[in-house]
Image (cartoon, rainbow, N blue to C red; front, side, top):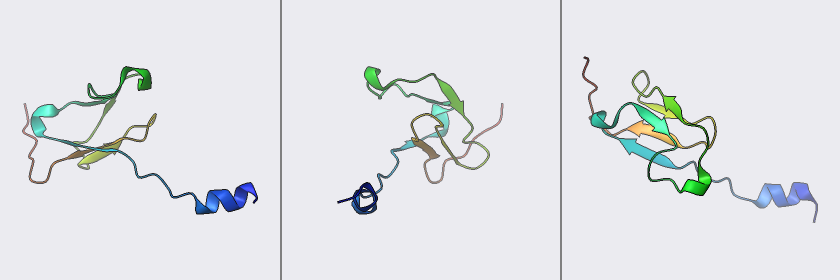
Length: 73
């Protein structure tokens, strides 16, 4: 079996999704629930403009819970 055949049969892994409440902002990754061995440099993610953002390092998706409203300062 060629590597092309193996890749075609391997299902794509869905990204891990973290749902946030407005009080959890600012969003950052890695989050405290992630294991220490899996850490990468901390990045802050802008979920305010679109309601979700994806970490450029690990692909974790951070999303506002349905109905959450971000209040201004």
